[in-house]
Length: 133
Image 1: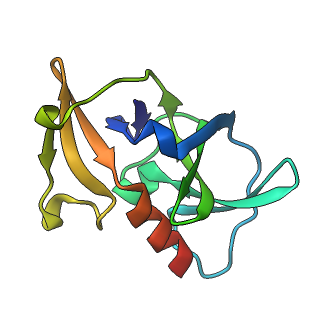
Image 2: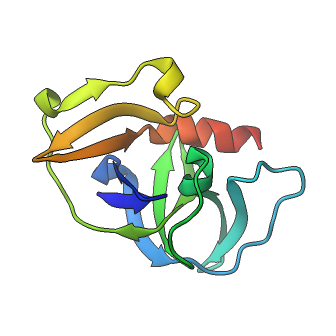
């Protein structure tokens, strides 16, 4: 579970390799505003997407954490305001999000953990969007 743009979010844990502090990014010419750019991670360049900006809301913190994830054979980073917890969710806690509420396909489900509502991110959809940029 993590926070992006003051929204509680989640993604599959098996797709996340590590969590690192945000570092300087090199902007990609012509990339959308929600793409921070390229970040050097131990000699490998990864593209980092700002999830708050993708949601269309301002970031609530300076800096933040990068979830280094894999989807569709691509390694990329997701800039979030902060990582909060690891949760186990079962299918009964998930509700499918309709297209018009999916933030361009990035949110696939809404999950409920106790009294908290979580936006479940579709990392494959985000990877496809990054491949286009």
